[in-house]
Image 1 (cartoon, each protein chain N blue to C red):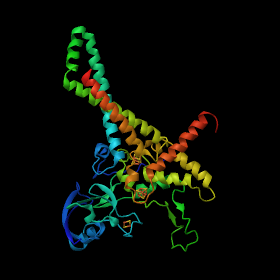
Image 2: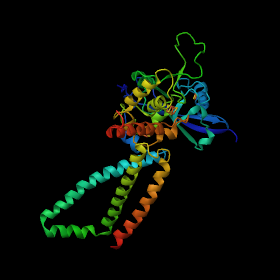
Image 3: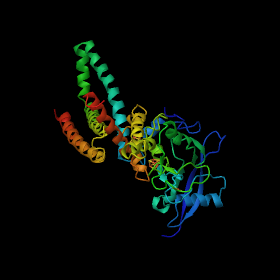
Image 4: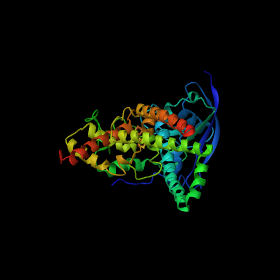
Length: 134
Length: 245
Ligand code: SF4
Ligand code: SF4
Ligand code: FES
């Protein structure tokens, strides 16, 4: 198989985080890649947080009510909007990556990104409005 | 535009040193001075120990690739004044082992092709009968690709794994499939598809397209990777539906 002959040596050790997230002077695709990783990690962390929060149900009604009160604070509502951003970005960009990754619309991958992001923006604005007005 | 003075911050490293460092030089740059020329000027007049690779000075040998202000470029066609920055940061390309200063060891980059036992380096279509210098079996090229390694340096996935075949090799594999050439073209295309159809081949790419952005020679490695995937996806579907064996 291919030779894995080091792409790096000791003087310049591999820095994956930098390779993924240092997007200075990079282009749209790398920004999308980095934000996709961040939102992916964020969503995975959120899943556990969500389960932890749900487990307060085990403490009965009082514990849950306390949480609900907290969840209605503006700060928490803002976090909800951040969460929705994460879901929308990761999901919509995921559609682009899946399509382009199978060779569908590869030439238009940039346009595809902006169209999906425009849809995402509208959905985000609508959800944010709902989150704060319901 | 008149001559201007620029500060060059150059990556320095010699074998045996514990860590790389950066050294600053002041260089005068005229309206047409390139980064490569400025570095050669530093070598001539300020520090003869600075080493770098170059050959053609016109974007065709691919040896002068480096990162200038964080971006992969061919330094021979990068105009200093057009960078629009007072300080010019010059570093060797990434994801390829460092030899010294701005020089990296391209051995592994080429080995990827050799290891595949396939004609990734293909007989030139232009010079089949040319007189060959002694010791050279035939003139070969990866077609448009300059073998500069800029795409490998810019790829975020290459930055986290050395097993990935990388954009240049995958683009070369696609050429073999897309543009069959020579007697054994069919078999070569099959072998190329097989070579890339695994988790360190074309499926490893995360569609960042940074390779295509930095490629100085319109090879479009990102597009080639997607083309390989389209081909393989189509074939997998057809096999699933038993339309093809
Ligand atoms: S498109 Fe693929 S090969 Fe090209 S830079 Fe992105 S991850 Fe690397
Ligand atoms: S594909 Fe482009 S960037 Fe990559 S090695 Fe070839 S010429 Fe250089
Ligand atoms: S010196 Fe040949 S490409 Fe720059």
